[in-house]
Length: 408
Picture 1 (tube, rainbow, N blue to C red):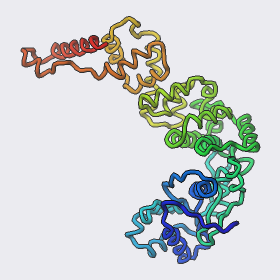
Picture 2 (picture 1 turned 60 degrees about the horizontal axis):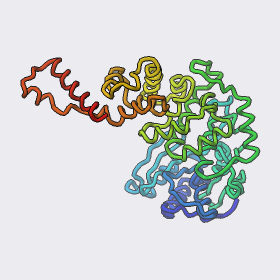
Picture 3 (picture 1 turned 120 degrees about the vertical axis):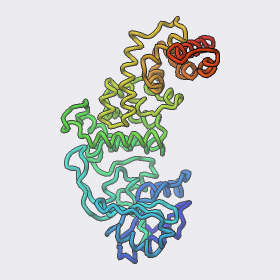
Picture 4 (picture 1 turned 135 degrees about the vertical axis):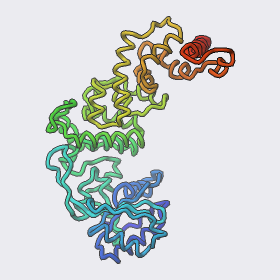
C-alpha cells in the first residue's frame, strides 16, 4: 500500500474531503474509491492517457453505506446532497453530491455456487470486495481516509505492461461474460490478455457447454448468464470501439458464448457497418447472422420489438427467395410487394444488411420509394368531383405509384 495524492480532473477535491470527514463522523474505518476512476486516474497521471471523465464515482465502505449516507446528509445538507436513494436489500446508496453522481456500497464477498450462476453475496472486507472484480487493473482502491493506494493484485504493474489479467484461476469459469468485458476494455485501452489469462480463456471455452439452444435445460445454460451476456453486449455496442472488441472475441474463439454460428460468420463486419449506415441497433443486426436469430434473441432477452424484427426478417428472407418481384419489375411493383408483405421498415433495413442479390431494390424502397406521396391530395380530388370511397383511395395510390416509377 502506497500513499497517493490522486487528482480526479473535474471532481472537486472538497467533495472527496467531505466524504472523508463524513466517514469519520459515522465511525467508518475504511472508505475507498474503487474501480474505473482509480484505474483511469493512474492511466492519465502516470501513463499519459487522455482523461475522459467519469460518469459516477464508486465507493466501498467497510461498515454500513446507509450510515455513511446519513452522516453525509447531515454534514452537507439537502442543497448539496440533492439525491439520496437507499437500497437496503443490496447495501447500496445512490447519491448526488454537488451534482456529482456517487454510488456507495457496503463491502461484500461473493461465492459462485456453480459456473455461470449468479454469485451468493455476503458482507465482507474491502479486500474481499476487490477480489470480486474482473481484472487486476480494476481491483485497485484509493482509501480516502488514509490516502493509500490499495493494490493487492498487482494492478499497477499490469497497467505499466498494458495487460488485462484475471484475478484468479476461476475468474472466467465463474462468469464467462468476463470475456466480453475483456474485449471491451482491451478495445478501449489497447490492452491485451496476459498468457495466463489467455490460457484460462482457452481452457474455459474448451470445457464449457457452449452449444446453447432455446429450450435447453437451465443446467446447461443458466438464464442469468445469458442475461449478463446481453447486458455486456449492450455496453460493448453503446460505449466501446465495437469492431475492435468483436474482433478480439473472434480471435480468442469466444463468440460461441453468444452462438456458435458467430464464430464462423464472415459477414458480421459488413452487416454491422450497413446497420450503422441505416441507423439500426447493432445487437439485432449482429444476431441476424446466427443460425436461429429468434431463439438466440429470446435467450438473451433483447427488447421485444427487436425480437419481432428478427422474426419478420426470417419471413422476409423466405419471401425474397420465393415470391419477390423480378429484377426487371418496375419500382411500383417492388413497392406494392414490400408494402403488401406488411413488415416494418427496420426489417427491410436488416435484410439490406445481409446484402442479398436484390439489395439495391430494397435500399431504394427503404430510402426513397416508401417516402413518396401522391402529388395530389384527397381534398383536391374531392374538389375535382371524386366521391369519397375506395375509388378515391385507389386513385391516390395510382398517382403515388406513378411518381415512384417516374423517379425510379
